[in-house]
Image (tube, rainbow, N blue to C red):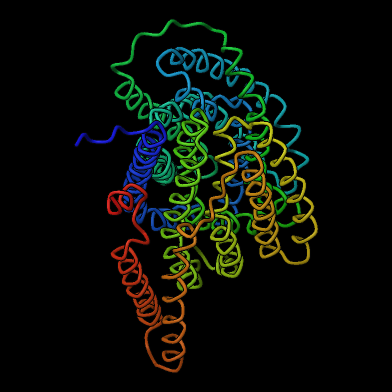
Length: 510
């Protein structure tokens, strides 16, 4: 008897499963690379403690303020072209690679002109800023030297991600950049550059980052066909980039609005404490951020195929991976925060409660934030802009309202709460415009090991409350029990098939 011929719908179903399995493989690779980056970053808090103790909270707070201004300027000079590469390269393939050269030329030229203008007008503006010193004005001018290099690095790294290669970003941005910055600051301080040492270290770090990003780009695009250079960015690319440009400027303002409002309402020491709080909060936030670029690329693939099922499965699996990774980091910071922060200096101990609040919001916003990334991958750059405007307006209102009476804790509530509202809006928009909803049973499954481990940890903590143990030992036991229970339940669910990737589940079912 002849074998039945597969129908068109069967072929489509097989194609869907193959695409979903490929997406899951890319996401697993992304997780593995980022875990390797986190292993290297374990030494960063120790290095950072040397930096803050060497320069003091006040000088570090001034640097945090200037860095906030520089990062906003970076978003301005990039014109949205870096994030646009995540959509452009998967959609246009080799025919679109020439646009990267045009984008590099445009960004570097714009950055040079914008940096010169900022150096000229920055002094009269900063002189009206509370607590500004002449050294701070000099530091701003120094840091502006790194603006063109920073912009070029961002474009090259985004182009690599467009080819589904995330390791350059992890190595350059998450490990090489902070290590070079802090090490350079310590070296400059040792040679007498006490007031401007961190600023010069920033410039050196941007130069090193650009060299590394160029090397990665040359290897990843080595076998691509030669592309003709044109100074003008293609109109289709610029049309997509402009809404993202405005959105990225506002997003950068969102990330630094807390530091700027605190600087205006309080003192440099408080800004320095906030800088360390956000630094630790970033440990949780960047877990989700590490997925943003690759999910944008995968969403662009699904959008090109108009494949709702592929988008839902990919987002649900990505949400699952984000939550599984974030929970242990959140608990570690919750357990050790009040013991780690004073190591940066006596002034930093007051950041314990704000850190717990901010990290709690980043945990809540982790998986839900992928909805906005998927919208961008589907070409809805204007929606991204609208959502960012709403979030920035809300955050500024909350900061001005909550920072004066509640200080750092008020800033943490304002920043985290505004992002929670943004993510709720984006989840609803994703469902409306694409039909996809990421919070399937798969996405919610990490709550099981987290809740089980939390119950065990709280019970143990109650038992140890009256025990005369060294605080570090007591906290270590508590976190160790959480990690053991969390790992055991996660392994059990994986063995049962609940936490396996879509490709693995399909293969098992077949």
